[in-house]
Image 1 (cartoon, one colour):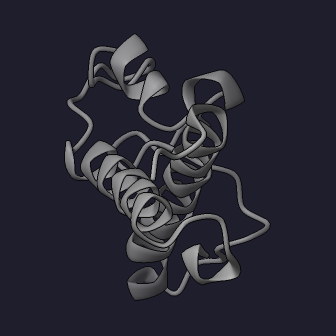
Image 2 (cartoon, one colour):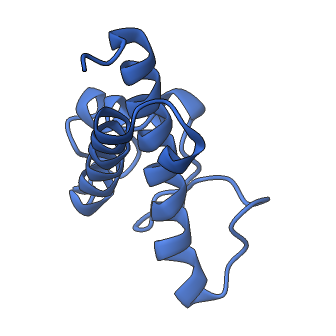
Length: 103
């Protein structure tokens, strides 16, 4: 069974977006911070992250793993969570096909 490559790509992208939200939850819940209304910010300098620098995986690569403002290294955990979540979603789609069990 060969999965449709466009839908497979869509599933992986959605998985990466879910991974990005998981990063927000992982970082903010222990600090008792809002996970929905507060915008993304650098954990080191606390400056706001522009939306185009916040695109899962691509933003990290574009910034070469460093904050645009303070130039501190961004923990690679963020990109790994996004990538692994995307790959898991793609793997589930490949294994189970297009059904609601993937999400």
